[in-house]
Image: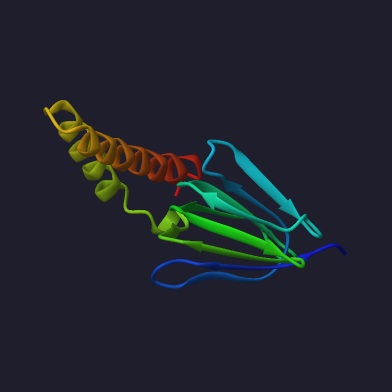
Length: 137
């Protein structure tokens, strides 16, 4: 069976460690990148979005993933990210509050930097809500 080792490390915990069949991540250029066993060596920045892990034994794992990077080298993938949460771990109320706060900040007259920071906060909050709602948890 073609598998590879995967370790996903968030800022607060090791989210996943084990053998997997595939991994799909949001890459910073705005698309998704999939990984299978024996993928070419790569280091790539990842952006917030939904990650899908297909373990060797068990069901697919879906998660919200924050910014970070992936290193795939010699059939071993290491993902380091700011945050990583399963849909059931996402606090929808908190994410909705963050969304509303970011929308309000964007309506105010802000510097260009503050506007882009608010825009990123809004995107992260909306992506968390999307992952939570997509999996009906």
